[in-house]
Length: 77
Image 1 (tube, rainbow, N blue to C red):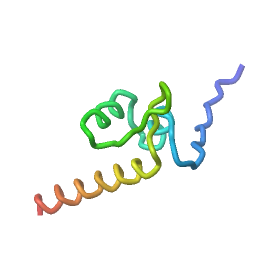
Image 2 (image 1 turned 180 degrees about the vertical axis):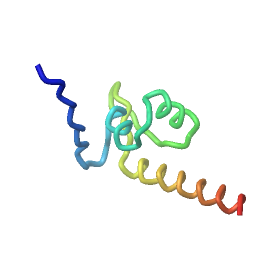
Image 3 (image 1 turned 135 degrees about the vertical axis):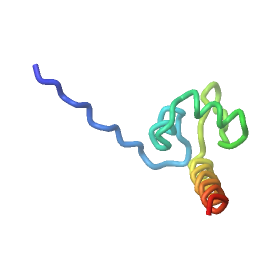
Image 4 (image 1 turned 90 degrees about the horizontal axis):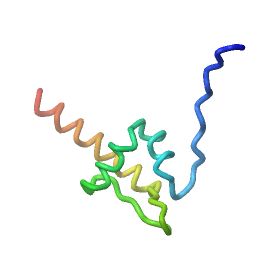
């Protein structure tokens, strides 16, 4: 038996992502994703019982993090 290292699973590009896919895209835990949704920092939609993250919401969230990072860097300079 070999100890094979699992290959990362590619997340297909599309308009809506499941929570597990958003976790991979953002490199964040499930609980942190839900915290961000509850805080209103990451938008989500419901389709039946499934909670989905729009691709645009992921892009907006990344931009929010970048903006917050730049503000904190400006404050330390």
